[in-house]
Image 1 (cartoon, rainbow, N blue to C red):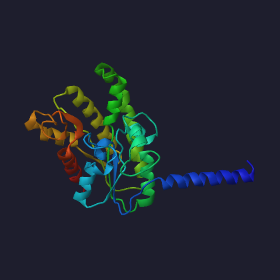
Image 2: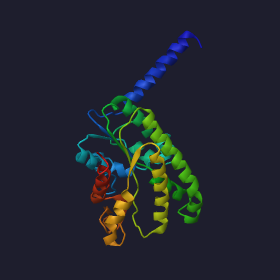
Image 3: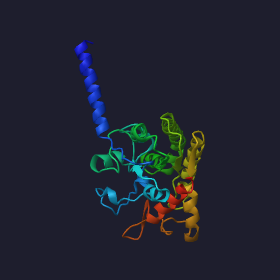
Image 4: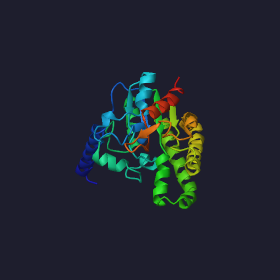
Length: 272
């Protein structure tokens, strides 16, 4: 390569790096980094998607409880795969980012945002939370056209990929020099009487617990917290008021404000 070409290539690389940095929003004075999918995002179908400030997820409540300002990098529909690889299969993150804002802006993957954030704000950060994985099951089910027999056959491969992705995520955070607490949030069941749903979530949570232990990651057992709250309501999260109530009196799968508070309390109980 000629010297002039090398210079141009270097300038181009620097320009790209600066453009990437400029498009990444690292909020000042934040000590808490929240990661994950629509649960952390605070998604509700009753709120206009563009009104991102109106979404209240458990990180907002945890932030108030532990008195740490939060930077929330979560994305609606994120899977453990799309967390790491841009444009990897997900259940809505790409479409959301193409049309609506996130709580913080960034052009790359959520994992790249983590690394950028820790590079900029790592010395001040003393809490990271993450909920990721339930959309991996959703992706599997969608690929099987909601055929449970097909999904059962594909579950081992999905769990293996999830374990590998979680390992990459936790290892990346630790290798970036962050030694503080990481709290991983388990998914809850909408209906604990649904054995298919419960079996899939227990398998997912088992993988999460196993991988988390290797990286000193605490697990907030939201699955059990919701179950305990649901007992008096026939083991149904909708009847217990923990899911968003829709105008037709049914429930969406996403947590209501009461559900988000329960998740936040479960997380905050693990923060020293």
